Length: 398
Image (tube, rainbow, N blue to C red; front, side, top):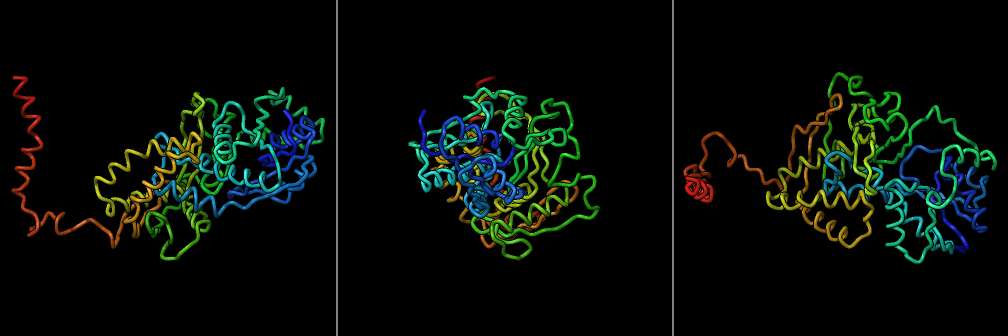
C-alpha cells in the first residue's frame, strides 16, 4: 500500500505512540498526530512534545468540547438514548466528533490516509471507520492492530524501548480507560472477571455513595425544546452545563455503572462507567417529558429509543437512518420546555418537582376531590368497549 501522508488519531499513550513511530517507518511518509480534546484531563503540552519527539511531522490538538456537547451529547439526551437499558453511550458519542475532525484535518493537510489505535476486538474500530467512510470514502484507512505483528503487550513494550518511547508503569494503572465530558470508562485488568468488584480507588469522577454528604442537594434544571439551558436559574453554555452537572453528580456519588454489554463485533464485555452529569440530565429530561409530551407521541418515541441507541453504539452516527431518527426525536421535543427540581442524595437522583408552560397535566381533571370537568359514569362504556374482545374470547372458551 502506498500513501503520501497519514493523519493519526493520537492520545499520547503507549499504543498510539508506538503506532506513530511504526507508521512513519512502515510507510516512509509524514505522519500528523491529531489529538482531540473532548474534555479529558490531559497535559496537552506534554502530548504535543511527545508526539513531536516520537516522529510526528506536526501535532494538531483540536478543542472539540463545545461541538461534542452541543452536537452529540445534547441531541442524544433529547432522545433519551441508552444502550441495553443502562449505558449512556459516553465513549460511543465521542467517536463521531473525533472522526469528523480527523477527516477535516486530512483534507486540510492534503493527507490521503487516516489511522487509529483501536484494536481488532473492540467497537471503536467500527465507529471510527464507519465515520471515515461516510465522510470521505477516498481516504485510505490504516488499522495497525489488524495488520502488524506487534500482537502482544510484551512486543509493544519491546518496540517502545527500542525506539526510546517512554513506557508507563502499568501496575499503577491496570485498566484501559476513556474519559470525556460525558463519562469515564474502565475495562480490562481485574474487571475482565465479571465477579470481581471494582476497586474503589479506581473511580475518578464520583465519591462513593456511602461517603457522599449526609444532607441532600437540591438542583433545578431548565430545558428549552429538550435541551438543558440553565441550572438553578443561571443560563450556561453547553460545556459549562456538563461541567457543573458532573461536579454536582460527582459530589453526591451519582452515575456509577457496572455492566456486561454486547459489543457490536459479537463478544460480551464488562465495563465500569462514571457518568455523573449525564445521569442527572437524563433523569431530569425524562421527568419533564411526563408533563409536556402527548401520551401517544411519547409511546412512539420510546419505541425508537433502542434502535436509535444501537445506531450510536454501533457507529452509525453519519447514516441516513440516524438523520431520520434525530429529526423525529427533535420534532417530539418542541413542547419539552420547563423546569425540573431534583434531589441528589448518596448516589440517588430523584425528581421531586416539575413545572412547564406547556404542561398537559390538569389538576382539575386529575383531582380525587369533587370536580365539574370529568363525568365518572363515562368510564363504564369505555371499559366495556375495551373489554369486548376479552368477553368474546371468554365466551368462546366456554
